[in-house]
Amino acid sequence: MTSKPDAAQTLRDLARLRRVRDRIDREYAQPLDVEALARDAHMSAGHLSRQFRLAYGESPYSYLMTRRIERAMALLRRGDLSVTEVCFAVGCSSLGTFSTRFTELVGVPPSTYRREAAEATAGMPSCVAKQVTRPIRNREAPASAPELA
Image (cartoon, rainbow, N blue to C red; front, side, top):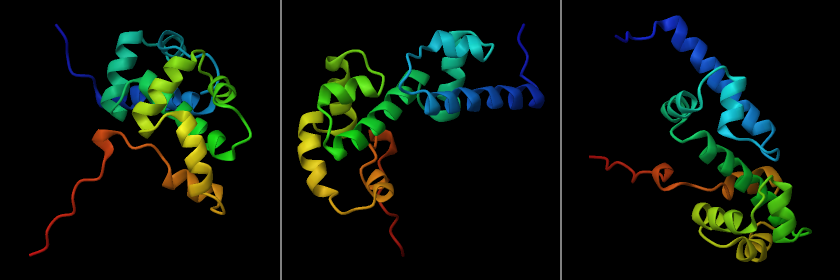
């Protein structure tokens, strides 16, 4: 028989999930896996994945890959590193997986992005370029503006 978690337990779980998310944000370039994140949060991997998805709308792995792609976009805009160097700098171990995920999130392959983004964001402060070029997932795409009567 299961019971609903009390408010205190829910708050403790949310605090653990925030710590996991903060760790991913800090250590995105390190080898991270859901099992290690869950172990450090004192949760099972399945429970962590379910709760993380409920709280943040995506799995811990998906969140990690999004952070890595965002950082890769910044490095590619700089233009001084090759796509392979960027792949390994952001913590990916497979160029193929990196390129596929990058293309899914950004809409163009990393080599194309590197060539076009450097020109598009030239002269733009890096903090503005980061906001303008942030990858948008389909479910995050802005809804159409409501019609005013």
